[in-house]
Image (cartoon, rainbow over all chains, first blue to last red; front, side, top):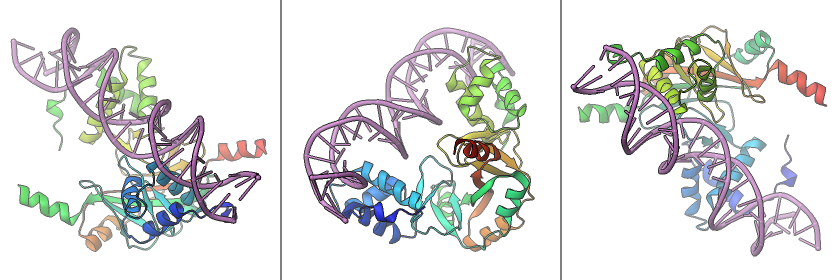
Length: 136
Length: 136
DNA sequence: GTCGTTGCAAACGGTTTGCACCGTC
DNA sequence: GACGGTGCAAACCGTTTGCAACGAC
C-alpha cells in the first residue's frame, strides 16, 4: 500500500503535511490553502488538492466527510469519531471509545470486505447555542 | 417543526415521495429524476432537488451523506446505519442495533445540543469482490 | 537527465437559483 | 385570485485536469 519511496518530498507537500499536523481542527482544502499560503505564497489551490489526495491515499492523513458540501482533512489518521455543528459547520473530535465489533458484525452480516467505519454526531455547538440566545 | 398544512401536495411532490418510498435503495437526486420521469416526463431536475430538500427539511424523508460526491436520499426517516461500497458507490441499509447512549454521552462531553448521529461502514461489496476476482 | 510535481486556467459535475408562467388551495 | 410550485436555463462552487515549465532524485 505504501509506495513512500516513489513520493518526492517537495517543499509544497512537506509544508501541507506540517500545517495539517500542527492543527487539531479539520480544515477544508481551502482552509489548508490559506494556511500554507502564509509560508508558500505562490502555491496553487490545485497543488493543495493534489497533495491532500495523495497523502490521504498513502494513509498519512485522513479525508473526512461529515456531511456538508466541503470535504475536510484530519492530520490524525487513526480511527476516531466526530462532532459536527449543523449551524456553523465546524467539525471536532469526539473523545469516546470506539464501538467495538461493528466492523466484524457488519462484515459477517453483509459479506462486505470492511475497510473502515465512521460515526458522526450532529447538533449545535455551545458557541452557536449562545449566539442563538443572544439573537432572540 | 411540521408545517405540513402549508405544503401544497402537487403531482410532482407526491410522485417523488411515492417513488422514494417504493424503493429500498438510496437513490441520488439524479436517480430520483430518472425514476420520476417515467411517470412525469416533463418534470425538471430542479424540481426534484427542491422537493427532496423540502421533504427532508420536514423530516418526511432523510438526506444521507455517506461520502462520495453525490448526496443520497432515504425514504425511511428513522435512524439506522449504512454500508457503503468504496468501489461501486452503492449504499445499503445495515441491520444492526443502534449504538445506545452515544448521543447522550457526546452531549454531556461536549455541550452540543445533539440532533442525530450516523454510522457508516465502508468496504467492498460482494458483487465488486466477485468482479475483482474475475478480472485478475 | 528523468519523470514526478507545480502553477495556471479552463473544465467538470452536482446543486442552486432567478424568472415568468402555472395550478393548488 | 393569491401565492406556492414548476420548468427552464444560467449561475454557483468545490474539485479535477491538461499542459508546459520546474526541480527532486
